[in-house]
Length: 473
Image 1 (cartoon, one colour):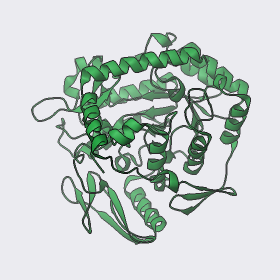
Image 2 (tube, helix red, strand yellow; image 1 turned 90 degrees about the vertical axis):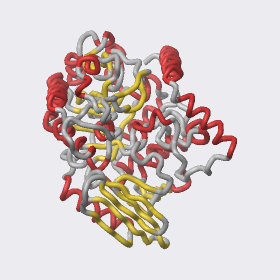
Image 3 (cartoon, one colour; image 1 turned 135 degrees about the vertical axis):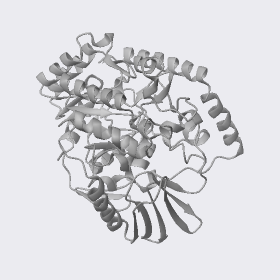
Image 4 (cartoon, rainbow, N blue to C red; image 1 turned 180 degrees about the vertical axis):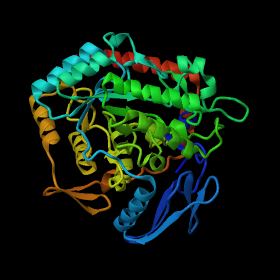
């Protein structure tokens, strides 16, 4: 695999410690097929661990000191069953018995949300009698990343918004990225000492988004942890019983912390504070390191964002970026993480039934719907007003369904009486040739330019606003 581009997004999309590693590798575990159906597996039973395939050797190491390992050989299903059992003994598992069905604002409206619009959608969900338990408000409600108060588009306040959702007999849900801060935030300006930095005192990059560089909260700093606990309790006090906490990787980035401890242990330290402060609220972890999150969250996003398109030639052929949003990237990643189901609700992201603002083919939409059935986590962002009668009926039927799922092979499943084979849709594309690679280098370099990234963000926001104005809710 080539090094993905652009480098400015490495903290968000891969482990920056190992980004230049050319050998096949992965965090915590690795598996090699030596004969048809026979595998060798090496999995860590602790944090801050990595596995590399070096020639004919699977090599595992811990970043600090020594730790336990599980070595398995033979059948894949049996190996993962035993591995998940050992992880449960050491890390725990999610508490919620059943994954809720969710309506989420993000994949239709993105950051262009406001309270009147969401109240209209909430009413339409009731009129259509969609069986969703959770109505989740995503990114766009807050003043800024690090300033978790309602902006002018939610003038009635988030507590009142939660009350409207409860009155409609839904569970209020809310999105936050609590381990991030941007330069425009009060958190960044008032408490730079709460943020992760290098030995020379320079802040560690957590990526780039919202037209600004991102920085990470130090989850070993006692004042930062107290702020984090207060924030979670405030969200609960507003009435939100479902939380989607995103960009959590920031807590596990390498850097100098207030208290010297391994980075994934520091991240888990922060998650324990979040879990305790949330009480009985459902905790969906997104953009989260897998093993360090087990036992502290109820659900986990197990792939990148889906999108209203299958893939992007820019990301696929020029940037070599398979963590970028897109239906195929999500499908490919999620299918290889379904072994986590005994430990956590596996969220493959939303499904699409609409044709408005959607480039997915009927087959591609069907594949994402089947993935959700197999993963056992159902969510949608489809706006009722955007659906035809047939699309609305199909979505309602999907949400109501509870098919019998049988795994037949690595990528083949039986859903009731229907067989679904995902294998032909997850193959990696060939490596780019010289010209594509050269163009990719130029595109990647441009995407590392902050001024250009800000301009791209402004352009994307304008295009989004026009698109939503053309398709009112």
